[in-house]
Amino acid sequence: LLVYTGAVRLAKNLLMSVIRRWHSRSPVVVAAFEALPKNARAAADACLSSSAKELGQVLDDYWHLKKQVTGGSSSVEPVRVRQIIDTLRPLIHGASLCGAGGGGFLLIVTKEPDAIGACEEALSLSHFSTCDIHVSTVEFDHTGIDVFLL
Image (cartoon, rainbow, N blue to C red; front, side, top):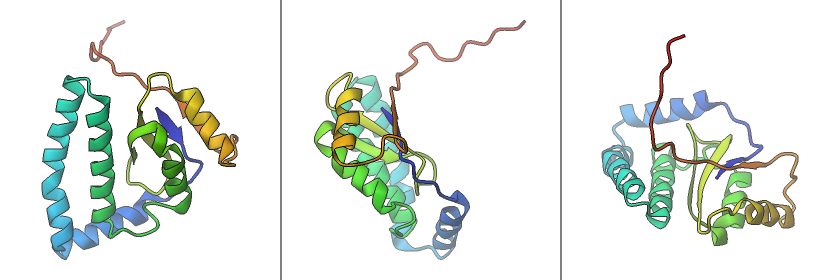
C-alpha cells in the first residue's frame, strides 16, 4: 500500500546533508552506499519469488540505510512518520518513505492481501486524522510499459 503521511518536507535540505556526509567520506555513509546494490538485488529477488515477507524486510533495510546516510536526523523520519509505522507494524512486513524521506509517501508491504481497511482502521483508532492521511493500493505491472503512437 501507499500511505500519504500528511507530513511535508523540503527534500533539498535532506539531500544537502547526504552530500556533505558523502564528501566527508563518513564510514557509515560509505558502508550504506556500498550496501545499496545488495539491497536492490534482494528487492528484485523478493519480487521475482513473490515473497511479501522478504520484500517487506528489504524495505525496512532500505529505510535503515536511508536514515544512515542522512545521519539519522529527525528531519528524515519525523515523529509523525515513526508513529504511523509503529501503528501499522502489526499489519505490515516492512515500510520505507519514498524519495529523500522526511514525509510524503510511505510504501508499506502488508502481511495480508487487501489490508487497506485494516490499515485505515488502525490509523483511525490511533487518532490520526483521516483528512491528513490517505491509504491507496499499489499493484505490480507484470507487462511493463506499452507505448502507442497516435
